[in-house]
Length: 453
Image (cartoon, rainbow, N blue to C red; front, side, top):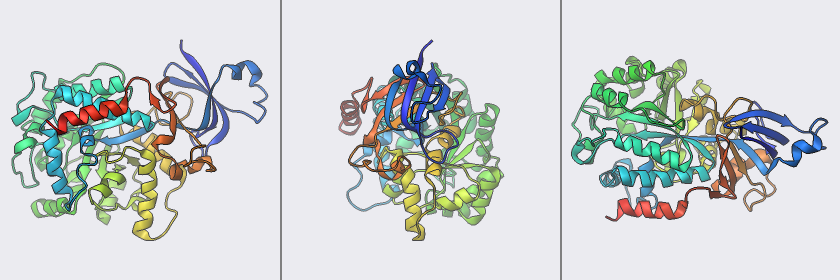
């Protein structure tokens, strides 16, 4: 039995508004078995023997962070799509060029490096919104789930938990234009064949589980939305969907269906507690009511939404409508959930010209427990007895965090300040270095493979 005692200088415990000093955290295998705040003298019952073998965690220790929305191969575009004018649609053309070059081997190498980069940032679980299913021209591989299997293996090698959100992607536009060019790699023909392919995919290992995704109302005809939603419900699996990321999407949906994308999803049974809408940047007041009334979650991706000039979503209005908020790095222009979290507050300040919209614990929740729940891991994202032994330690003595109160890390720290990451009881990052992967070298090699050949 592998048991460890960790002595955190500060730990942000479940249910607390701010970190607690001097906390003894005990773990056995992959679970937290004890959480004991100690008095300044070590506590009346702590005893020298208990603390002598404890692993010291200087700084503030957080629960594992969850990246609820990832497109791993988009990482190859970082720094390559920022020169010149354009919008989401011009960026998408460059993204398709990378998608056209990937195969299972190159995708495994790239995703392994990207997931390892995430662990350096304190991310212990990722939701991979996966639509790059088939070979060139849409021809299935011998294993129709070879690309998904590559992602599962990449996560195992990087040491991160994964929810593979397998996306149904059938058409190129709301009015049903057929897939063409690199998009042909995304399609299964119809939702029933998508479901049949996914039914045959049963990844090994306890680190991964499979969920479903509707790419968007552009990509799944209205008459097939219910098929995807039913597949997810029958398996108690999470269901994610890109929603109202662009005004053009809303306008096209109204033109074809006479309603907003949110209303279309509601009318076909897609919304609900197990569903997460990604972005929701341009909802109407009626959309907010539908999302909140159904307890559908929303995953905000502020660094991507600003990078692609999508706009600033109404984060506070979403939260006030009863919508659980989670966070994702999406296109990986940045992989830093501290930056995503503070952007939720800071973007709201830009939008409203007022300060003070989200408390630090609300930002922590979005970055940890809410994200894990959105991905189907309801036993993670909290430092609490019985939860998974995920611990992320952030230094408080760097040039960014020196003199900062522990709760202030959300407005001061970055991924470079993460010193140690424990995933399911195993130390994966120590002193800011990954235990298995030379992350920068592997990123450079994998990105070059899909951008230069």
